[in-house]
Image 1 (cartoon, helix red, strand yellow):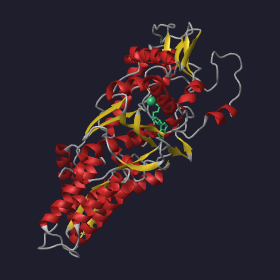
Image 2 (cartoon, rainbow, N blue to C red; image 1 turned 90 degrees about the vertical axis):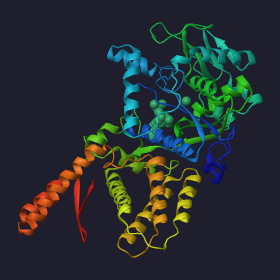
Image 3 (cartoon, rainbow, N blue to C red; image 1 turned 30 degrees about the vertical axis):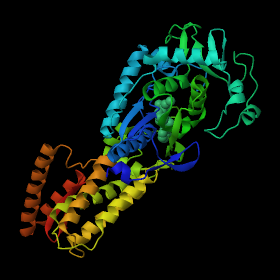
Image 4 (cartoon, rainbow, N blue to C red; image 1 turned 120 degrees about the vertical axis):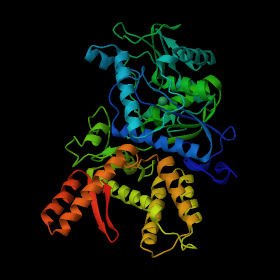
Length: 494
Ligand code: AMP
Ligand code: ZN
């Protein structure tokens, strides 16, 4: 039987606020859309956390054997400064400040995003469409919404009529807000806006003369509203109804709420079966954000070049730190937490490497099949990576005990343990063993360290402890830790 059939995956659906058994629309196939970055600056670690949360979802679905079409867009137009309908386009503003073309900004930060994601060993999505590549599709949707009577045109701009929509549909069902409360909590319009109601949102905005990112449309030379691109690109590539839509928690309202309204208004179909929202990474207890400067960049972590850090950390350790928390929990970033994750990750990898040297017995004292299923149970429970990692540490304990010959394992159980650890550590979590990354280089590195260990042993035999300590300490400074055990000296990379 295939893994898909054996394992019952449940997903926490933000719209029903419960965990639901996952049943895709088409058997064995999953359509997943995740809101991508707005490419006007370097992605910070908070952005990365959301994308890595969905990388885990993508990897696990694939691991189970689903054929996944994963669409993650690039927002290269329409996202205004205040997330609303006024202010400058973020990309155009940056381009103006730097006196370059908006598309130069888009290019630079798309490359930064891709490079960062590949450092984190995140898989590329199946399709990565851009907003500017789908202007025609967006115009077609606006025409449909207008013809259904859920939008109106004023002075070359088109707005979605939230009140009209709410008469026949329900606006606010994802975020749990209701329109009356929204009305009660909003200031009346100041007469400057073309909107009928403050809750209405732009589908198309007429461009002011100075606005350089503009396209022709039946209403004006202008640009699409931010929410519309995701409706256009998700339904174009996944159909008007698809399985999973994800994004950061902060996109639930208004962005995703407006996506539901646009889809229902144009197709009369609820577009998404499972809404998934990844929680925020915080720094000093506050959300990491580009706008406030309260953030840390992945490049700073990899180089250690930030006063908040005592040293550099690898991308794998940073990712391990993130996966030690559930994707639905807030996670606070700190140097101490990274140090602890690094120690934990090294312990796990030491145990994994040790597996091949374990002496097999005729029978086992540990039920490896049951343990393997508990790894699946953790991931089947809404991708619960911290529980999965706890299970992997359980295996590390067993490996250590069996190395010390306190418990026995049969060869077939050793093999299953190795396969399961490898499946989950490398395939599902997408972590990398630093020693295996460049196996050629790492062989050379291992050889060089072995030579140094030999020299240290010689110094010790000659009672030249000053030299032996110097070798150990200088290796430690270089991030290589020597460990003396009864079978000789081993090393691990910090
Ligand atoms: P943006 O480029 O601002 O559109 O954001 C890209 C993605 O990062 C969105 O899914 C956001 O929800 C997400 N995001 C932004 N800030 C954080 C944060 N501090 N922690 C986790 N995800 C975030
Ligand atoms: Zn989106």
